[in-house]
Length: 130
Length: 126
Image (cartoon, rainbow over all chains, first blue to last red; front, side, top):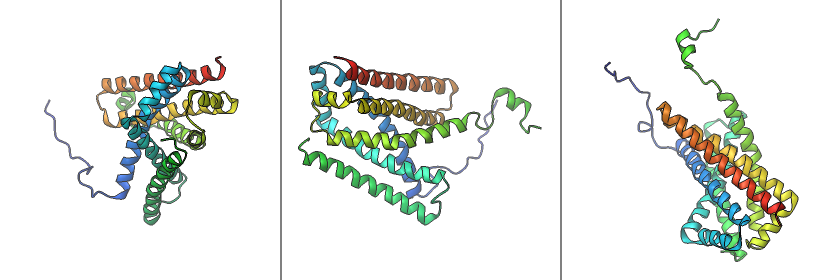
């Protein structure tokens, strides 16, 4: 049977890159990264329940350069996914669909995530926890 | 009278069959995660240090242990609901889709189960 090439609806490459699709893609990618964070959280909890050397190894891993980058990424991903998630919940409630509102809430989610991430790490630094 | 064709009904094709339940569960778990994750992040930030004894004492306080278990359970559930949609969106080979879904189910059950067991072990052990 010959496969007939069906017409496709316009997708990814056709559209102009704009804030709506950027934030939508960012929501999903931060979600995937946070799903990996679940593995990190589980590892931390299991190491915490284990003996002292196991926990010391976990702390070494999390405070290694790669570990810190992951923790920083999880902090930003968490706050962004949180703020943009609230944005989605408001849409589900039928609020904020106007073009201006959509753009404003999008920028608000980005700004909120950046500021919260910065604040959280400043707090860690203030408490000499880095 | 149903507008679905007999063939479509027999093959189970057509519009979403169980979509609403998934959609609703994702929203409910999202709402639950707002206070739970904020509590967890702020608690960790405000602990005097992350030494093993400090974290143990924190989780051995009943309310903290309970909230931590609730967090891990809802987090694993929400994470599964989110990641399985990605498989369903981009994997179109039925066998691969089922395999991917199974992997996500096992991984999330494992992560959730191990996390909850660890918290219980800390709360009740020693």
